[in-house]
Image 1 (cartoon, rainbow, N blue to C red):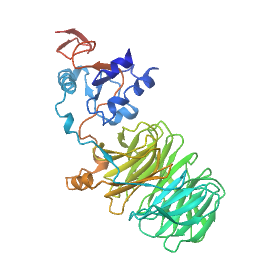
Image 2: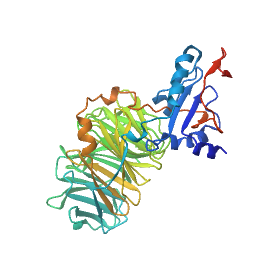
Image 3: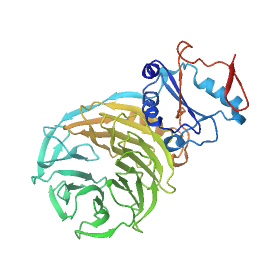
Length: 444
């Protein structure tokens, strides 16, 4: 009965009160996904606050309609307007895009990709070794490494013709791509979970079961160990200015690290699943994370505040790529889609479809107008995103870290009220009289 009511309804109203987070909350939250999906243009999600209980977790990041006693008149007007049929559904800016170019690499399964920012080449890591491919022809150019060590971690420098590979047997290799030779080989003691490369001084940050450490690749040795909570690291990113490192963890937490001090500055909390993807703006002030809880979160790394929770994926998020200015991000998921986000508004600008299996790597081109993605079956897709990015970069920009309100407001929340097109089988909004305790007494 509830499922049928949800399917037939266009607006979901969840009412926050002292009793909102009871044993039914987990089930109710799962039933809201279709209303929170930005591609579900005909549905809306509305949060209502009934008493002094403050919204928490992901609800704390969004606006609500206040129906407490002191705000009844204004709140009722907003609630009524929020539940009225929209006439502009067809003008939504969220679009679906098909890949501009599709390439099927004759190799698989592929553990990881590293894309050259100019879009001409890609490195792939498989159980058979490390291979360089020409993206124009789709042909392999060279098998860099034939060891059966599965290079499942790859990073291609944005500024230098260098790439770093990390394998399951805890081996790091730095590669000169034009010369196609290994510059150095480092044997770590413990299994690797994440790598981040800085080519200015040939250093890298590695995450393994032993924690987080900074390595000098030229000297082939660790130069520092980060002090703080380091267990269960699943992902790592290093800012272009070399000042900030972030790590995503199996417990859903994210640590922000000061590279100079080698210690944790702040812990970011909010995800309810493992954090397999993290990214940083160039100056390290903004972080983006993706989790097995299917959400993406945008963070201020200075104070630990979650600026936005981005929802829309229906499966775990395994890859994140952020533009250097922190204005846009791409997310890749096991649901076989990518999404392009505008971070100051939280708006999903478009959904990118074309992969046949889960996506494990995404990257921006050097000019950040194109994107590249690779899936586990060897499918590579190239996307021209200039239609969205050029247009919006000409607009006035509200700085991400201070923006707190969405372009078209989405309300999120906790107890269920179904609103349909009519009063048949549902509750139609009409004028209510209210008693002093804030409960609806009579309906006129």
